Length: 62
Image (cartoon, rainbow, N blue to C red; front, side, top):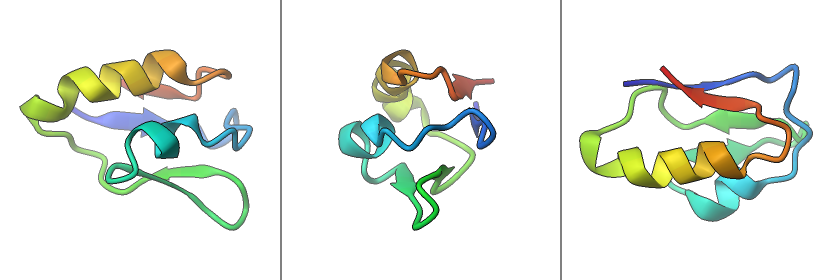
């Protein structure tokens, strides 16, 4: 499973980093960057919450 961040949609709200700081960073440019594009099975529930919490829907699981 992979986490995909659409950097053209991201508005830098930082919800992803606040909920999962080990998985996301909002850079100096204010745009999200996943720390890794692959996720382990135990993280799936948390990352589903992160995807649902993104106010601009810039994240998705694939």
